[in-house]
Amino acid sequence: MMNLSIAEENYIKSIYKLEEEGQEAVSTNALAGELDTKPASVTDMAKKLKEKKLIEYEKYQGINLTAEGKKAALSIIRRHRLWECFLVDKLLFSWEEVHELAEELEHVRSEKMTNRLSEFLGNPQIDPHGDPIPDAQGKMGKPRTHTPLHKAKAKRLEVVAVSDKSTALLEFLNAKGIRLGTQLDVIERYEFDNSIELKIRNQPAFTISEQVSKNIMVKPI
Amino acid sequence: MMNLSIAEENYIKSIYKLEEEGQEAVSTNALAGELDTKPASVTDMAKKLKEKKLIEYEKYQGINLTAEGKKAALSIIRRHRLWECFLVDKLLFSWEEVHELAEELEHVRSEKMTNRLSEFLGNPQIDPHGDPIPDAQGKMGKPRTHTPLHKAKAKRLEVVAVSDKSTALLEFLNAKGIRLGTQLDVIERYEFDNSIELKIRNQPAFTISEQVSKNIMVKPI
DNA sequence: AATAAAGTTTAGGTAAATCTAAATAAAAGG
DNA sequence: CCTTTTATTTAGATTTACCTAAACTTTATT
Ligand SMILES: [Mn+2]
Ligand SMILES: [Mn+2]
Ligand SMILES: [Mn+2]
Ligand SMILES: [Mn+2]
Image (spheres, rainbow over the protein chains, first blue to last red):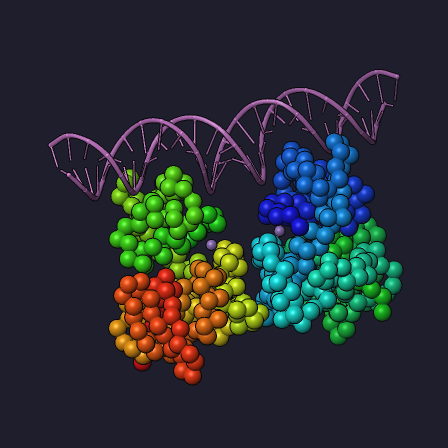
């Protein structure tokens, strides 16, 4: 496995994420948006990653990870999520505080350390936001039921994962008492703005915007 | 406190180390040696660090940390040594394996994480090589008895610290059964090459070179 | 199909952190 | 004190990862 710079690792991870979200081929603009950089910079890096055979890329045709690129991505994601577990389980951080720190810790590359860390944490299968943790061989422990709340049909739902990217969102969920495993009753769906009225047992009902419901993954119970 | 790049942090740490080792003003060459870089690069960085008021520096006059520079150094060293403790105590690495990893982990800057880590480890006072860990306020927990074995007078000695930089040295010490707290009897000092014959209780005597004895810190018992 | 709009790439530049080679200053030795 | 050696700095390049502005492709819209 090649030695990647931090910038290269961040590109690989973002490409993986966008592919996973369903993009057939990842566009220059989408990647620039994800990485908060400019399209021209993405084109530059695409050439370099193609050279290193981590992506398939033809001018104007978008980007896809090669098998090797995918392996690299899973290794980075494994480190990221294990560190998030460490910060929450051992250092008692709350779930909205750990993503930024894990963004840095993930770039310390040592298989031995990663595997020891995993063992130390009891080989966790999911991170604090409900996302699965790839194993040492780079196999992702099942992609989790991936239904966002705004698309769920059932009335009674359980929270299985939440987006980890927005601190503000996670703080909002804290305030509402929503965490992994929380059971939700959908009281009403309002068509005009796609907001949803929810209830958690023994608590007053409240309403969340579409923006929020898109970032809560649920399964029926 | 300013935001430093990883390169800047490494310079600050090395300047601190050389000052501690007794250099009145740290020379360009010494710093280049320590950082495994070229003198010309050191001059470039010196200008930048002076601009940021982390060092005092005049052309041809060498380098000294300012109060602020010293504070930055202690903060980096604190992170480095806490991570070494974590790797040894929690992830069961041995002492020769952790320095390289800590060199990377130390650059993740978060006071909150650092303090939580310290607490999680039971606020250790020394790292796995016997070096003191600065506290959250940047006070170094006493500089330790700093007598290298080749200068010690007494016959009966206890190991209080070892240099952490050479994996090979630490592996050699492992093989000889020398660790922190080990009690040594000096059998003989050979003038012609400054080697020392040592004995640990219940074990056959053995000889170590001056190179080795320079890197073992001891106190009389 | 022609044109407009949107997306992407290229050209040319900047900043950080390096380097080599040449110039200059300081120190050491006779 | 003059000269040689050593240490340090400057000048000019290089590499990585960005950027803006302009050019070019693709796609969508009349
Ligand atoms: Mn995360
Ligand atoms: Mn990252
Ligand atoms: Mn160390
Ligand atoms: Mn370092």
